[in-house]
Length: 388
Image (cartoon, rainbow, N blue to C red; front, side, top):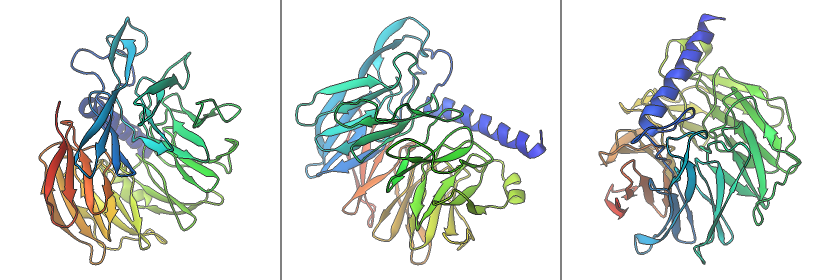
């Protein structure tokens, strides 16, 4: 086993320990009192309503015109009192890490208990179904709704496609990867792209679930969400590298940084979904920097911008400005015209959840359970969903 491989493996283990301690994601064993999974759901906006999963295990609908909650639906389940799936059961709330998706009159969301929930905003009724009732595993990533199907990856290492109306499986069988999946899938046309902890990026036929090309292998686990731009798939990895892959055949186009440079940066892991705009990639990193790369070549457009705090929350684009949140709670506005950055707001609360935006307002769900509204130009902010 090479020195580089050992460093990558150690880096993956260290990152998982950070996630377990800070975020509450518990993969093995039982969870003691005060250590239950908490979640860090981002928001989805549809028809003037923002939907997100609260820290109390509820799907929350916020009216953006009145800046107030419309309704809440609890996603409760019977799970082991001490966590895991092998202890005595009790009733508790469901941790929600993934961002919900909306299609028609239903909102879909995945639970850490291994269930997919479909909630009707009109009736406030919810229905939860296990992805695998015989061996339920945590759902950490978000889901995608397209072509009449719900697509999601699970910690059992499988990718599922379900009918949006019935929840019935759409493929002959789920697609099996070599390790757990925390990545949210991305779909482009009839191709579904998703990463796995087995270090591979997969391209699947969205209709049949069959592989379209040989999986692209990186040097570390993949938990981030792919983005597709100009027939190229972009993905970050726990090996501290960022990749551009040909969407047609899965061949590498470029890698940033080159291998020798990656070994000298042991704390650099790409977790957040990047933003692509005007042929430029903006990729936040757990080393606290934002890397600005030429989408065609992978070269740095300018030197990385150091925010001084890890970036695990996925940024958003608002009228040519990239809004980025650091884990320590600071919100920045990066001007794509000159790549200058300014502090927009300081929430002084931990931020892990992906950002979302509508009409110049950025919505930020913090680890205190507050949903903030921040004006992307002025930085003016308010709370629209307070702590319970």
